[in-house]
Amino acid sequence: MFGKLRNGSGQIQTAGRFSRLAGYLIAAKFLTTFALAQPGGLDPSFASGTILSGSAPATVYALAVQSNGHAVIAGDFTTVQGVTRNRIARLTPGGGLDPAFAPVSGANGTIRCVLVQTDGRILIGGEFTTYDGVPRNRIARLLPGGTLDTTFNPGTGANGTVHAMALNASSSYGSPNRPVLIGGEFTTFNGTAKGRITQLTSTGVIDPNFNIGSGANGPVYAIQAPSDPNGANLRVVWDNFRCGFLVAGAMADLDHLMPGNI
Image (spheres, helix red, strand yellow):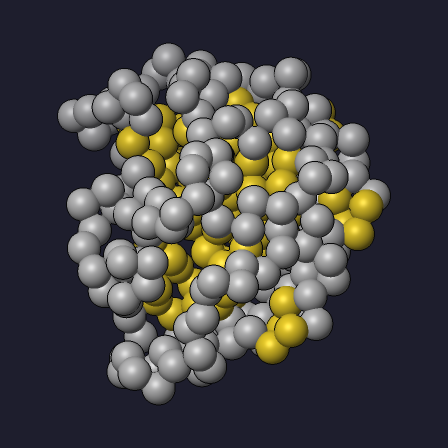
């Protein structure tokens, strides 16, 4: 299991690479996403036919539930319920494929993280180098319908995988123009040295007001900021923009000040 979250109805939606849950057959060969009823049993109203496929065992690495109950899923799959969806798709509250979310050609590589903004636009990060045929090195933003948002232009982007992202609500920018924190395995972003963590403005460029020094000395796999649904009560961990965020990964320090992996 690579991702889980609780939707507006109190159900838990989860995704990963598995075939059974609590004795129920979820997918005969490939991965699926599904919802759990609050007591912990499988929710039969959520379509168990959300079967994905790809050149490798298809996997969902990230999911995000929108305010209308639709779930954006992303990973390394290339089809959903027999329809081409290159590494990102959206499901209805019942688990069916949402035809209104229709990328042109999608991502050409694995998507590792997904984040829905308050205005419905969607940020994605991962290992891809193009989206809808346009160069986007490992980070991009999509319009609500799934096509590329060209107003978010990260230049040459990240030189390594982007594993995590979070909106920084503690900055002085107003919603939906909050900057986005990103972390991963990259050491440069748009040609500028960045030690595996940086912050971008709403247009995709490096935020000049964000300075975390030398950054992390190893990969960053998770970031949680106060704006995250699961981090609303987070308190100061790193003193930046008068508030803080949590990072975790395979690093020993963050700007030589924070020992350990978190």
